[in-house]
Image (cartoon, rainbow, N blue to C red; front, side, top):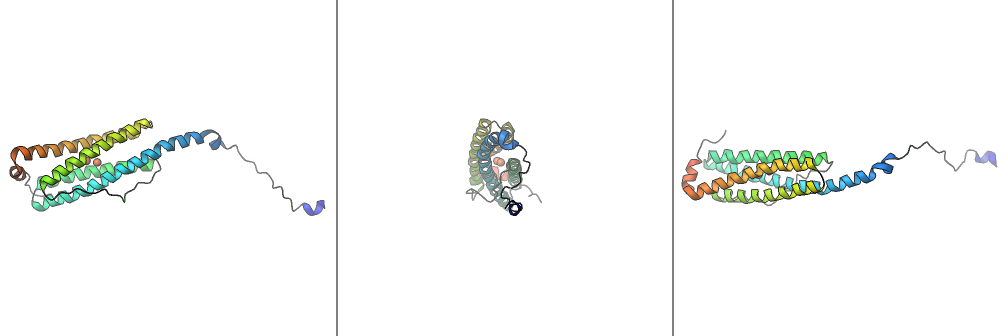
Amino acid sequence: MNDVNIFNNSVKPQLFQPPNLVSLNFNHLISHKMKGNEKLITTLNSLLADELTVINQYMVQSEMCANWGYGKLHKAIRKQAMDEMHHAEWLIERILFFEGSPTVSKLNPMKIGKTVSEMISNNDETELKVVTEYNEAIKLAREVNDQGTADLLTKILKEEEGHVDWAEIQRAQIEQMGLENYLVNQIDSPAS
Ligand SMILES: [Fe+2]
Ligand SMILES: [Fe+2]
């Protein structure tokens, strides 16, 4: 009987297995870190949708201004679209750093406007909303002890506040000098 069972041994040879260091020591740290990041990734993706929306909003507006011959407005709004593109790029970079998936297919409802006045008040409203959202995201980044993300979001926030400033200056000028005088000042040869 022993001879028959020699090649039919149900007990498999035991391979040497190194101690499982990951499950022993680091799993709880990794899951804790990812938990914070997952919430942040969702927030970063939501900010990314805002950025991608305004890029499109500003691109259309800047071309409408070029079409009307308001070259200065065309350049100013186009420059803001470029700022927003940088913000989107930085957010994508950060999401990838966290090994998350950047969502680039989502756009929020766009507020373009049919006239220059409508555009400016829409942009003021949009930028104020964005400023609130960045402030909330910075608070979340600090709550999960992610100073790197908080710093990045603060850098973007400062530029968004600059956009609010720009829109409010335009609104004040329209109010003080009248729309027609304001628009005369916006005539310039459009950028090639
Ligand atoms: Fe932005
Ligand atoms: Fe902005």
